[in-house]
Length: 545
Image (cartoon, rainbow, N blue to C red):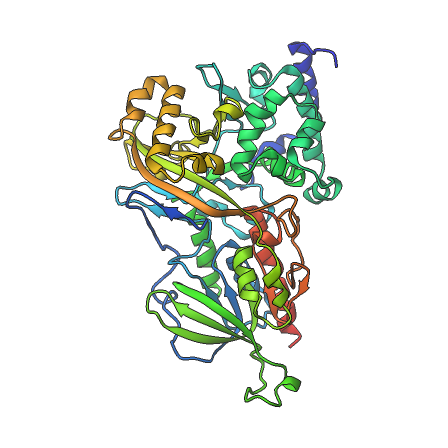
């Protein structure tokens, strides 16, 4: 390929953008974990005292639907069933083991006014299911700038990766950026053409099962460009090396970031979960918190009951629930049940149901782990743009013991609600290898992060090292942050979701359904999608009874 001049490349970019994107395309559409330090606490904002009251302790309560799991998939299920105009589910119970809803999409709130999302997260506005189910105006979203800042090796100044697809005036910056060669930038054009001109389903259908690293190399991107930009960006999203990521998911996330914006809501990511929880309650869903499901039992069919004392009725399942605070147990009867938990919890709950015993011999689905450290500091922040900062120094200086940082963000710069007046919040994302290299030594990991950041921001180095000035507010390790998405049986890369009445190829008993991101894609959109699928299936099932 001949070397392109900057002038010719500029003309080529301009022509392609004008052909592909009308001006309207630039308008944005309107984790269980352990907290190891600080005094942050969860806050339940979606529950009013009446709606959140514990259900009666008497046995034999009957529901049309019991949803197990108050994460995104579980709430989407309950909402889908409850809002159906002709729904036959008059009584819906959602059971959650934690003190509030949200699953992996949770936030903690410190006494001095900081909001700590449980693991670095952003709200992607272009997710189709989010647009249908959430009120964006009520979330009061503030957007990140398109693109990213990148810390390159042996470069003191942070490099800019601009996104002229959403900010046309940045086209010169995009071409002249030191991140990637001119050839790399020319090779972006066919990638952009693919993600812009194809719909989401086509991106999944047309792409063969492949890993993301091989996919990137097929576009002839240089190894340096892959290492400095794509690797920290995509590994920060999917929490695993490019060689273990699905190329289908790569195309999907590239489309989402190309046609929409990343944002943060007022009050942290907990606000998203709270909105879903409140919507479910407004539709009449009963939410039972601090309650762990111990088992699911299927009632015998009428022809199987001759030698038993069980009476035939419409309540096909009995859900045994333990109250985490009071130590009590109760049995709740239900006509239908949706298991909306992560894969491994679902497997454990299902394996004792007659006909599903073979699940005991199946291996667990791998879960991706991630960590993050939050620091509070007095204003100003070292980076005062609402933008993501990537570690582009190469694999030798990223996700290692000495250089643990993958990416950082200042959430309070994106949305001021994350920190009190006069202060900022820094979030440092750490991938599994960097955490394991320190063998659980939090102090060692904290110091390695401080040393690395002080080299990135030399004007702030003394403050970053000083623990009284950059105050560690929270250290999270999320062991089940995402299900695996590539090269494993049952991995989460199925747009539209798998059949919710099967699990690992086994048909579920009538009235039992599965939801969760492991049933679709390892994304917030996938969790919502799986819940909608399960909700539709419940409505269909109950209408036939």
